Amino acid sequence: MNIEKLLDKDLEIFKIISNSEEIFKENWEYIKYRPREILCEYGDECKYFYVILSGFVNIYHTSEKGKTYSQSVYEKGYYIGELELFTDKPFICGVETITDTEIIRLSKDVFLKWTRSDMDILYYLMKTLCDSSYTLSEKASYDTLYSLKFRICDYLIDCKKNPDCYKHYKIFLSKKYLSERFVVTTRSINRILKELHEKNLIDFESNYIKIVDLKGLEKERENERFM
Image (cartoon, rainbow, N blue to C red; front, side):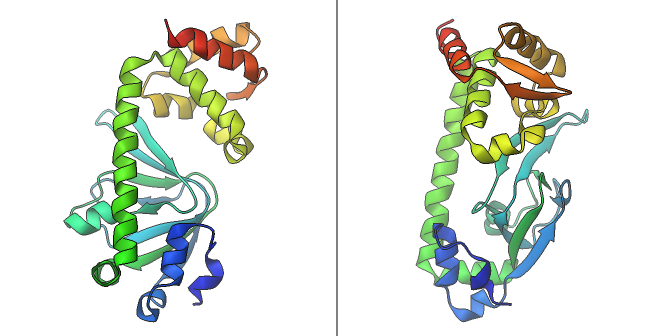
């Protein structure tokens, strides 16, 4: 398979893959997934390093009571499996596709040989892992310091401004997804959405949210920031 034909050279990780030695490039596998397919589950053995070519995947945790918490959504250029491969541990979370998704993967032994011999990929992984750790620390502070209403308003604003997110509003702007993202009950989500709806900031299409007044929503967020 000619892996280079699949890569968008605008992203750094794809450039690194494209410039790697042939012995590594020829070992990538291409896989296409439909929505809601499981890439891996918590506790599974990690056998591959995955890189997303297109689509969105949900990185999630499930409690003993069956409650799902969405830790993050990964998209084009994101990678999966590095923590487990480097530490030789099972998957710490579950990974499920949200949309049609294209992925390339590299087997564990080839991945480890690649990282030992190529400083570009090693440095890239180190840098992006530091970025990820920083973001998670920032999110922990954010979740502690700000109210649920503020965080929901902020999320809705970000989604409205992100064409890919708003295009898939039936996924990212569903009440179910918000409940999973913020790790709260649907009742808590509904209470805040009802308030925003009564102020004509949002509207509903079945169980999905439509943003009606972006500027009004931004003002509501700023008012909530200092509550």
